[in-house]
Image (tube, rainbow, N blue to C red; front, side, top):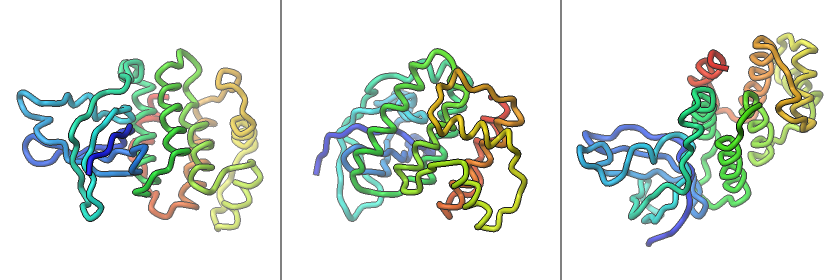
Length: 228
């Protein structure tokens, strides 16, 4: 059966000589895996730029419930993430978030609130001219609510990590900065040195790992921390 849907690219891998397998979170069908044939050929039907992390697509797709890998009939760019691709810091954020999303989203069914959240946040990242360094942190804090373990307060994070047996030192400066992020202060009004940023990031990642057993090592985190 054919479906018309929008989608957000999370990840792709090479398949055989000229094709790729792409994980795409769709508005209508949730997370799906698609084979995109001949995209790496000399004269491809589609550009590989369509399948970069967090690209937003307009799609016409085939769907059969019993299949683990689906096919596309048509795909085109909804709006290019030109600013993300041209900005090394934003590109690092996009790669990190796409890896995170690939590991925390598993549902193969429609989830309109989550899809709308991702769609709008990607648009904001692409358009944001300044003060986007901590975008990935505010994104993760908001995303947690769509995943069912919403982070409500610094005290909640601290208490849950302690109860889980993770008895590591969390300095007050990092907790204060995390509280600023949680209370919705504007990105530009929050200032963090590199050490504090890393500590806050580790704190949020550990909280995610506490709730999502499959979320282990995030390979792109090191690159993100070095660039930011």
